[in-house]
Image 1 (spheres, rainbow, N blue to C red):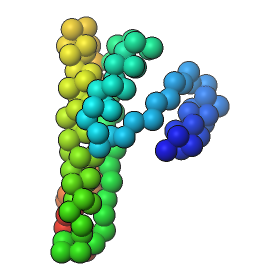
Image 2 (image 1 turned 180 degrees about the horizontal axis):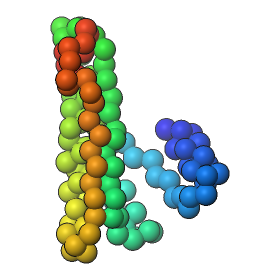
Image 3 (image 1 turned 120 degrees about the vertical axis):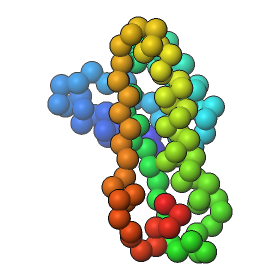
Image 4 (image 1 turned 90 degrees about the vertical axis):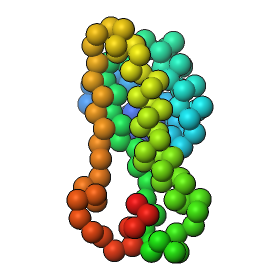
Length: 117
């Protein structure tokens, strides 16, 4: 949300960072690509990409709605592909950059009501 992004940006600025914030719906590929182009134009090449977006629906599989499963895949999996595809070419061109994908520890153990996740 715009409010959350602004709060985070303000906290980073309070800690001394220079900040420009963008709100992006990570479930929408075209919005990711559009935001990436805006970042490139306004800031320049990105050298560090941290993929940390994630959503979860805690319910048993048969109670989880189709749109909830689709959203989890769109954000938790596909968004990582789209953001990487958006920023990796300039990293390769510059022969410099890092991509960090933050994954959930939930993949290492069984948790009730998280089958779809």
